[in-house]
Length: 390
Image (cartoon, rainbow, N blue to C red; front, side):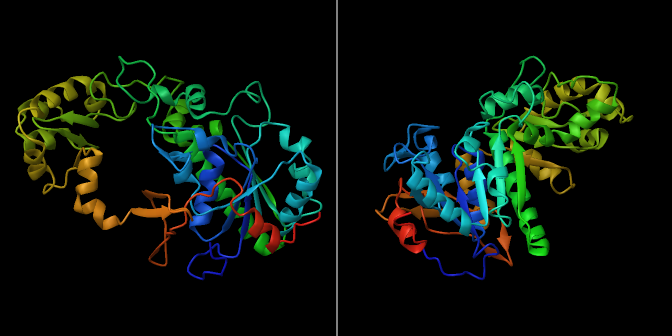
C-alpha cells in the first residue's frame, strides 16, 4: 500500500487506528479509507477480528470470510496483544501519531486497558476518538450484546416491513450496523473539521439502537404526533405502514412492478381499471387502502411488467420494474454506474466487491488493495513508527 499523499482523495494524510471488529466500526473506517485516510486495523495476534470467521454464506477466501474481505479492504493490519505492556506501549506511540481512533469494545473494557477517551484526551488533545456501542453507555440495555438483529428487535423497526398478517419482519440486511458506521463517519468528519478550526479533537459516540431509531424518524415522528397510534401495515403488498395506496410491489403476469405515490384515479385511467376511478377523494386512498390495492393487484396480473411500464413511464407515473440481482447486473443502468471493483491481497487472493458510492470532484474512489491478513504490516509499521524496544 502506497503511503504517498494522494491529492485526489480528501482524507489523504490522515491516520486512523481502528480497534473495532464485526461491522459498524470497520464499515466506518472502510469509508474513511475509501476517501484517502490511511487505516491501520489493530487486531489480536490469535484469531484477529471475529468477523474473519463470520460467514454470511459458505464462501471463504484465503482463510477469511468474504464479509471480512469486503468490509476491511484497503486497510493495513497490525496485530498486538493489548494486555502485554510492551505492545501496549507500541500502540500508545501509534496513538500519538494518529488523527482518529475507533473502538467498539464492550463497556468498560477499553478503560481497563488504559485507552479510554478520558485517559487519552489530556495527552492527545488533537485525537478524534470514536466509540460504537450497542445501546449507549447508560440504561438497562447497556451491557446487552450489540448485534444488528437484536437492535432491530428492540427498535420497533420490524413492525414496518411485511404485510399486517406477518408479525414482525426484520430487514434482510445488517441495516443497524451500516447506519451506525455511516453516522460514526459523519461525526468523525465533523470533529476533524472542528479540529481544523480550534485544534481540538473530540469524542464521537454512536450506538446501533440510536442509529436505527434515527432511521425511522419520518414514521416515528408521525407516531409521536398522532396520539400514539401504532403503525398500521397494509394487508396487501405493504411497503410503508403510513403511506396510502398504491404504494407497494405488485405481481404482473411475468414479474413484479413497484408503484410509489401516484394519483389513484389517474392510475385507473392509464391502466384501464375503472374500479379505481371511484376514489376521487385522496383521503380514501388511505382509509380504503387495502381494497384499492387488492383491486389493483388483481388487475396488474393481466399483463407483463414491460406492458405496464410502457404505459406508466411516459405518463410520468412513479413506477419501476422489480429486478433480481441477475437482471440488475446485466442492465445497462447498473453498468453505467461502474459500481464493481476487484481487490486483492499481496498473495494474489482476489475478490470482486462494490466500490465506494461517493464521487469526489467527479472521480470514483477506488483501490485495488484487499483486506490484510492478521499482522500483515507489523514489520512495516514498526519500522516506520520506530516501535522497536519500547
